[in-house]
Length: 133
Image (cartoon, rainbow, N blue to C red; front, side, top):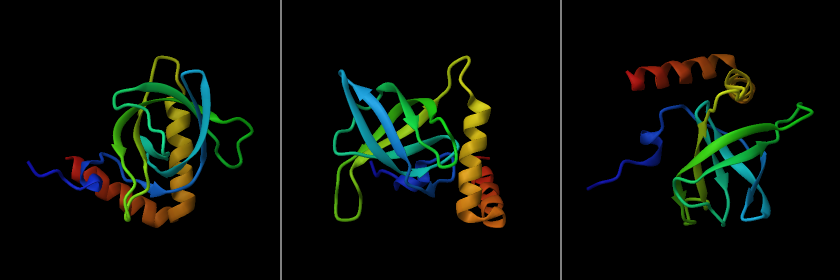
């Protein structure tokens, strides 16, 4: 079985962005950084990934916000470091009742628009929507 390249498996368009992330594992706190982000998830650069399927709570530090976003995530994939890839884990955002899903989506879209510019962001999102159909 041939595995599709990672970018083909993504449901949402991603944008490279480095943000600080904090989370806890077995009574130890970790601070790592994102590599990219989308409305549906993020990639956390780390040499200490959590096991696939692990659900955890993490804090995403966004420039211009007084408080970090607290987000539930689930580890979807683990990437080992290679010459072309940084080690880390692909995280899918998981929303529970009461989670600020609309606020998280708005903040992520704002970061993507700021990074790409409104025209390129709109074009990228239009392409991602057509791929899902």
